[in-house]
Amino acid sequence: MSSLADLDPLTGTDGRPVPDATAWDRRRHELRRLFEAHVYGPWPGDPRGVELVSVTETSALDGTARLVEAQVRVDSPAATFPLLLVTPAAPGPHPCFLGLNFHGNHTVLDHPAVTVHDRYAVDGAAGRGDHRDSWDVAGSVAAGYAVATVFCGDVVQDHPDLAGPDLDALATPAGRPGALMAWAWALSAARAALSSRPEVDPSAVTVVGHSRMGKAALVASGWDDRFAAVVATQSGTGGASPSRKAPERCVPGPDGRPEAETVKMITRRFPHWFAPAFAGHADRTDELPVDQHQLLALSAPRPTLLWNGTEDLWADPAGTWDCLQAAAPVFRFLGADQPEVVDVPEPGQTTPGTLAYGLRPGGHSVTREDWAAWRRWCACRPGGEPQA
Ligand code: GCU
Image (cartoon, rainbow, N blue to C red):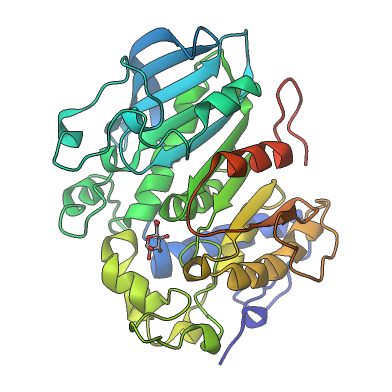
């Protein structure tokens, strides 16, 4: 069985080592094309003609914040989707976290001015502010950060039977993207749109995401290097965990589920997230010409935090550590501060370096404590230049 070491990010498919940063730029393009063909489907193209329209503004969080609701409108490829931005009321520009949410923009903050779109008003839909603890907008604003978010379902409906038309709308001559690629593209468009807001520092936008949205955050950072940094939490398979999993983590348990999610499981349950070719590799992951450490390498040398939970084995904290180790040489090669770290950190610790690994006790979730830890780590600090 082949290992991550067989897919050296710093050796081209022609077998030649990458000698310098210019050659890395070519190699980066090669890696992107491989990921597009075999894992995520094509990038819909850099968003062009991006603006924020239908902007409404109001005060929030007892006057300490400004709340902006708007539509991101993109000329090419054509798309329009809502964006919520909450910034400190103090004059900016502020560093900003930008991420996709799972259940609607109205769920990240309990504020009557946030539109609850008709399509969210279905039985069992989440209500205003239901997910405020996993966003901690108040904590970020108090610490001097803006927070911007887009509901994933406003870009691509997250269901294998419903995603097709949304994905067709972002198709290129090379085919249609998978949902993770389409969501990443929307993050890139949202980042471009935010640069028109004086409250946001365009050089200090960190893309953040949990689980499937963490996978999309890593793709966004890999294809759009204007993101200053990325925080991917519990991103798992298709994110920071390898497709070539250690065999012992793939043995089905009594419920038929292996310890860590395999390519076979993810492509069966979520075929709309990926290029069809990825499912074709489900039984032959060692024949994939790319693996996920090379996705991490596409963010180098920008600050990248991989966040994990000790009990979230499905998202594969051990494999994520292996991917970090295999991607770290690219960060060093490009001049980032990337010390050798041999051991997985203790729970509660984050490793030093530009490509960092955090492990906290607990399972698959995002808590206020997670946000506090990310802000402590954060490379884009309020009032300062982005720093590793
Ligand atoms: C499922 C899926 C994971 C995904 C997660 C999530 O568990 O198998 O790949 O990361 O959902 O998005 O919460």
